[in-house]
Structure formats: structure tokens, C-alpha cells
Length: 364
Image (tube, rainbow, N blue to C red; front, side, top):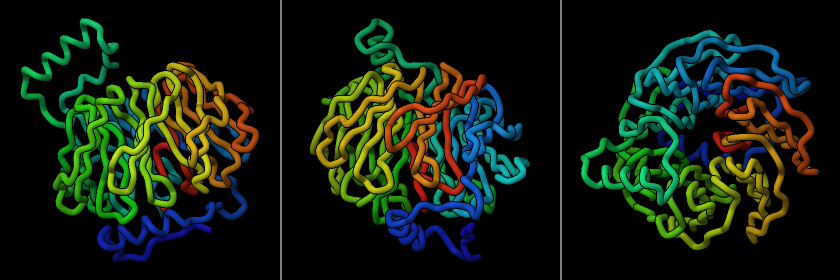
């Protein structure tokens, strides 16, 4: 049964309520259906995977150039893609694939989170979109000097009203803002700033920065960030530190945990018992006990696997692996790969409808 939000519901104060409801949500399932997964392909369209058969059944040609970030609204009506080369987002009818509108965001839009009828999109005016140099290399030192010498443009999170099709405001982050998460009470947005080596916390309503968390002692380039299902902690991956940092509900780092090589996307399972981290260069999905942070298992995946999602019934995990051009299917109980779905167009992000738990999404 699909849920449709009543007309007239607004982001605030209903925003905070929806977050609390989301923490307690049971697995959603469309009547008689296993649901669908949507994959953003940086070199092509949106692939649609039937989760009952684990086969690609159609492609939507409606995204712009180089779609990366991807989100689906809670009512299932809209898909949103962040199109890096076009500097905009596409708003797409989820059922038909028809392009409904585009909204100009800014240079290098990348990460998308949806909440109610709003989309939060990070974009990076100072980024050239290329992979960062290796830490300590001459290229990295030159880039660091340039950052110190130049007045680089900060990154932002654009707050978009999807009904109105316009940007309402922009929340200023740091340099190369990447990952996005919301606080448990719905008042704050947390963003990872790759080039600043920090995580900043902002008031959603005003955009005012309320805290800066320095993660430089743990490595360079924070990427992914997630709130625990109980709302009491937050975790973030440090790409060039091969590290995971754990923050308490006051946004204080209380623990660091070693990961595989080049971690990015991460997500708790729905119960909050396990934490999953995608390690791009290790070509693994690492599974932790979310209470002790001891490694439960390290699962082989593919090349440049950044983002993943559980199926709506929580029985399987699908991870998008860009450089090996595939989506790897993993049994969520045995933690063993069960299938590889070919996708030759550089898959980047993946979400499902009904909405499920994943590195890019969480059920509302």
C-alpha cells in the first residue's frame, strides 16, 4: 500500500515529526510487488531494476548529463537526479520516467536527499569534478597551497521546493560539500566538507552554522555521513584516512574505527544492529557490529562501489559499482554476493521504491 502525504503538509514543523516517524518505520512493501530499484548512471540514463527478478526492465532517458546524486520522494511520485555536467536537478515522474522539470542548482551538484516535498542538493563551485590527488603527492601539496592562496568559492546545499520547482535558499557549507544527513530532531543538517576536512552542522530553517567538527586528526576528505536509527549518534567516513568517525548526539567525535581502503557510502540496517561501509579501492562492503564496531564480515564487491541500498523487505543489498559497470546483489543474512547485474554506463547511486535503508536514503 502506497502512502500519500495529505495536501497542505509543509516541511516545518512536519519535518521534525517525519524524521521521528522515519526512525520507527517498518519495512514498506507495495501490494503484490517486491518494489523497484533506480540506478543513476553517470554516462547514461536511469536504470530500473525489478527487485522480484533482479533484472533491468527499463531505462529512463530523462536525466540530464552525468546524473549522480539520486533521491525518491516519500509518496513515490518523483525521482530527483543531480546532473553534474548541467548544473541542475531533474524532477522525474517515477512511474513513467517523464521529465517534469529541471531546476538550476549551481556548478557540480552531487548529493541529493529528499524530505517531504523538499530536496537538499549539495553542489561544489570550487571543484573541477576530478578525483583528488593522493595525499602527500606533489599534486596534493600544490592543491593545498592553492587553497591557502586563493579565495575559493565555498560549496552549498540548495534547498529546493519540488512542488514549486525552485530553490528556496542555499545553506553555505565548506569547500566541496559532499554528504548530507539530518539530525534526529529535524532541526539541523550535517554536511561533510571534503576540502576543509570537517563536518559542519547548520540550522535548517536559517542556514546558520551551529558547529564545526574537525576531522583532520583522522585523515583527509570526509565523504559519507549517517545518523544511527536511534538518533543518538552519527558516523562519517574519512576517504583518505581509511577511517570511520563516530559522533555523539552533541556532534562530538567519541571514537574512530579503521576501515578498508577509501571508504565512502555507509548505512545502518533498519534495526541499527549492523553498520555497512563501502570501501571503493578495497572493492569491499565492510559489515560492523554497530554497538562495538568490531568487523563482522568483509564482502567482496566490484570496482568503485560508492553507494548501496537494502531492498524494501531488508532481505538483500544492492551496491552500485561504477568502474566494474555492475550492480552487485548481496544476501543481507548470509552476507554473500548472489548476483551481478551488468550496467555498462558507470553506475553511481541507487535507491528503491518503496523507500528503503541505504547510503543515499532512509524511509520517511
